[in-house]
Image 1 (cartoon, one colour):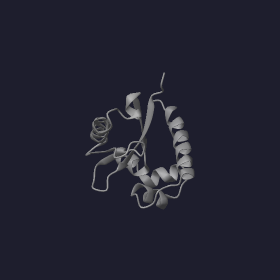
Image 2 (tube, rainbow, N blue to C red; image 1 turned 180 degrees about the horizontal axis):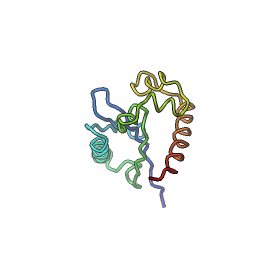
Image 3 (cartoon, helix red, strand yellow; image 1 turned 90 degrees about the horizontal axis):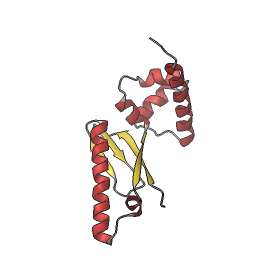
Image 4 (tube, rainbow, N blue to C red; image 1 turned 180 degrees about the vertical axis):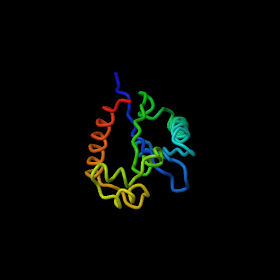
Length: 137
């Protein structure tokens, strides 16, 4: 039995406004929308179109499609702040112990965090969520 293919999709703020979703796992897989849900729907449609085009050209479905696939969504920091506009980048940075100016640059896609920096942000974000889960009203 073959294993279902996991496709990593990145959600980011589009340079032209709105949200874009792309994947390096499937050539040409790119979706766009005015909001996150529209972008995800467009991305899934593109995946289906890509599989159909591949079948027309090669006579068979691509391996990522034939065995089934699951999309795993990840945010770049610009997409995170676009999806959750109530989170202030500077205050978020301060709360997790990071440089506020650098976080604003990540938000604006002026610079891209390294894998190490993303891991630090992820861990500190996870700790913040654990604190928030303890809140009772």
